[in-house]
Image: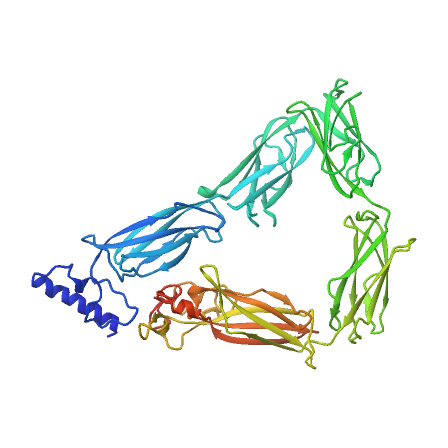
Length: 628
């Protein structure tokens, strides 16, 4: 019989004896492990019955961005209202809430503590926290709030036209929510682009067009999520029966920098030109109007036509809106681009200046004018001076709106001297030229990884352990600009609990399965499938994926790259991992591997409570087949 079980059976028998002798359940020997008990260090017992759990919820509302949390304090009392020390307390949260248990066993004040946050789920929702001690449970609710959606775009358009609108989904910190479906609908049934559902982009937005098929007071509705998590926004749009549109120039016209371009809008009502003198407001995102020397100008119609002149001193796209000055009147949009066509400067860059044999580097040419404006549609010619037999993907290119064009240099199987490859770029019919040099190095054949003896804390819940990968060629020369892929794979987990050999010693992990339990994810794909071994039959894979590393790195000039292994404090001592670094060249792969158990800091092992609580997150059973 284990020390824990023996202590509990002894306490129960002693209770019966005292009851028979007239003793009461409040005797000091029953409020915990008795003075003559045999419990091991770190053991807890609940020999007296838990009567009540009092919960103190620090904040009933938290942000959906996961930046804050609510402190839940549980006060455990017996049936006579006395606080109970040394009682195991369990905390659990539903609805994707994240629980960080800070004190899993009650102290002398009968209190246990946990922090609850919204985690990585940005939905507005109610999180129910369940606290259990003995046979008693109690719940408290926390509202995760702050996620919202908005919509921007024109307030009025004309029938038969279309206009562009943008919806943005953000969390409580106004950070974008990516990859979430946004549903779009209209009150009058006017068409929304090609589909009513869109997934948010990296900036949390979806962009769509409203096609005005019927006039009237329309409303665009955008929604995300459902149920209690539903967020929505509405945009009122007036669809005018008037015809109101740009007639010149055509959309996406390129306007020369500092040149004046006339814009023309036609305004008809029921097929007839509106009355002369009707006011039209023009607004632009780039450039100024000659009539006002600003980005806004108001002009009047003549024969249903309103004209305005625009120019710009800097390049780039301009979105021009024309609208009736009357509230709710028609409007139209058109996009133009201001461009510079007089190159005076050329800059040449490579994404890497040292490459391996049979590798590639992207050569980027940027053309500007005398005022540093980017020049579009400029031709750049490329030539190569290379005795190793490398090649360029093209001999020339034409600059885009960012004033850039690029070619790719591919090395041969022969190394060059230092800066032994030169690429020249010129702009025809000008004196503008530029060059850059590359070095083709040897093959990367060796890789090694190592760490020091320090682990640092990252906030309240994480550790970071610095590692370095070093890549060299066959001669031990540093291999710069070499891609290194890093992965961390859990291979074993341990059941057990922390103990103190003596009161002055640090916490030590005591394993109830001495050799640990092999990872159940046999094929390391993160999915429980037929190839895996769910040994404990709980329908989930153990251990948890609780450690991370950057997926891809690039070595510096010294052939090294340093990265952090990040993992949860609650997993230290309980997971064994393989840290793997891989580099490859010409289809040949070199790999370095280190296997170790995630470590805790000495400070945490010397603290009053061990990291993550007293027990392993994978239980304390003596068999891997038992999920407890």
